[in-house]
Amino acid sequence: MLLVRGEAGGTTLTGTVYERGERAPRFKGAPNEDAPYVWVCDEFYQVESGGSAQTIAGKEVNVAFETPMPRGFDTREQALDAAEDHVRTQFARIGIDAEDVEVTVEKNDPQ
Image (tube, rainbow, N blue to C red; front, side):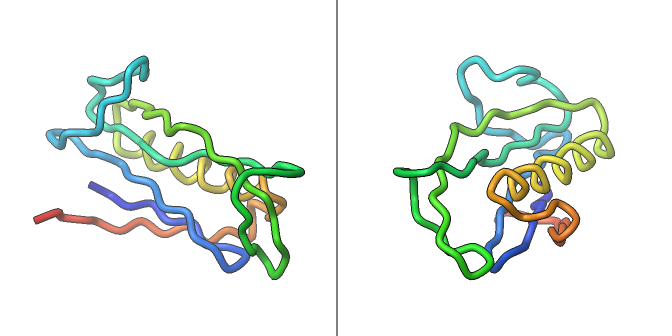
């Protein structure tokens, strides 16, 4: 599995790309559950009130989370491209410029 991590504004978002042969978590109604590469990550957005208060780039932001929705891909490259785009989009949804997000990919071998 690959961990795709975005960092910006003093906070981090990490999602997982499950590779061919690895068992990705199953969610009822998820598309492409049997794809060879599956991307899973939280989704969130800024709200005026409610949600969870987070300090991002030195200011308090209320953030609401959505249920993760796995997305399946045929190739590793497609999955990683979508993962990077997803991470950058989540930060943009809370007021961080997508270009300011540092994205890294790390191989994770669970024991």
